[in-house]
Length: 119
Image (cartoon, rainbow, N blue to C red; front, side, top):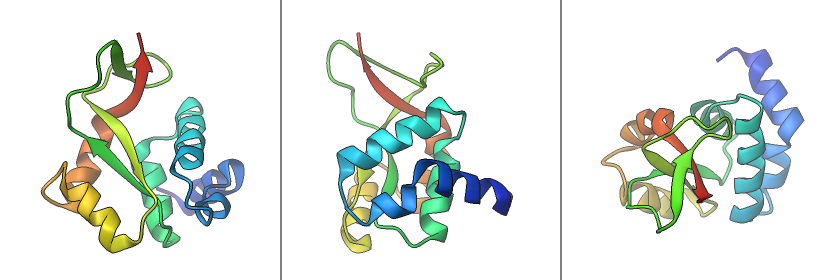
């Protein structure tokens, strides 16, 4: 991803600034806004790692709760749903490894990850 686009993501959505609060609900909301603007979860995760943020974007592979669907804001159906961890790296990786065998596998799954939408 070009550095210019990284700067746009950081500036527009204030991901780095808000990451310091370690508020998973706030970060989920900001990430959702990114998705509304066509930014992918892989792009968000790349920016977060480049800036050594606490927030990790994780593809949750569990069965979604009843009466929900998984999709992007534009309605595109997805397989996995977004889970956000704002813990220290060691513990965030424990969260990630509950759903994927490695960081790389999770990163690939992010392409098929959306938001839980109440039906």
